[in-house]
Image 1 (cartoon, rainbow, N blue to C red):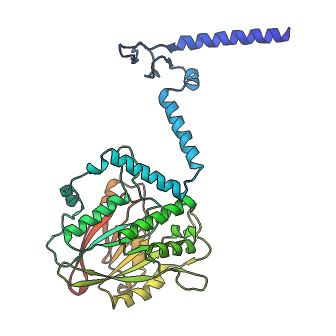
Image 2 (cartoon, one colour):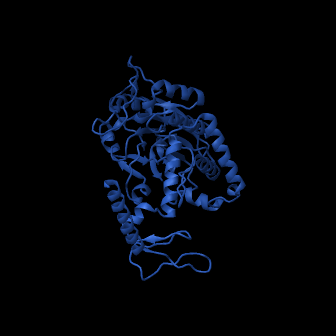
Length: 399
């Protein structure tokens, strides 16, 4: 008897709920093409879905019957989660890149560039600099690549892609008739340092090697993979990794502190540029990955006070690759005496969440020292002309 009473109550409840749903649900009329139209006489919450479905403004139906768009979003989310649990191998990544390249080629992407040659040259050439200047250095700088070589795949405005960056370098060399100085201020490894991130970092350095990069700085985040991994990559790719304030347990530099690069200027003379790499120490006030315990990072001021005056005797220009934010560089410069300050600082650590004008106003000075900011994941590439005055002094910088 109890069971009969229970099932009778359940049947009544189901009938009541069914009547509520029918009262709240409205079938949208269709046009001749089978597309549903919005009924202006129905309250808020009614939209357009696929043919043959019903919509309701009631919360019960919205929870139990997702729209086509919501279902598609859920499907994509589950697919992404499934892929993230299975990291790509080297062979799978190479196969995926080849498939994407073939798709772009089949779609005519290679024959339809985003901008013409004239537009590209007008875009990358500084508008305030005279192309007839005889003593200037073309500088191409980047940073914070985070194991990324492809575009951001943003639907509205895809940016980045190291192949596009290589084209910019080629155009600069053709435009100014001299090889540019190419540097990276660090942050090429994405965190956490798993196998996929390491593979991406290796591909980044291989691509930079083909672009004939002059030096790559080692940032504090790059140390998360260990110094042995970084040194093995530098050896296999022939990329010069710089750092003047990363030491091993014996107190010796893990990487080359500096190097001098010779460039032929437009007037036929040779300029010698000293490149130095430093990184900020680990910041205990914020959560970040701890570097591997096979290296020690010191404050760079002490090392720079000794190193820069020595390089001044051998080079015409001193460029510091610093894995610091733009906001922290002035403090670093003020710690150095006037004879131990670089001419130009390339800031490697990216400052996110700023207005667009923040990133467009790229060049700043602190006590006569120029600072230029890097980009993020290769989506931006820095281009500047460094005009040299008498005795190799920096006369102006045109970003």
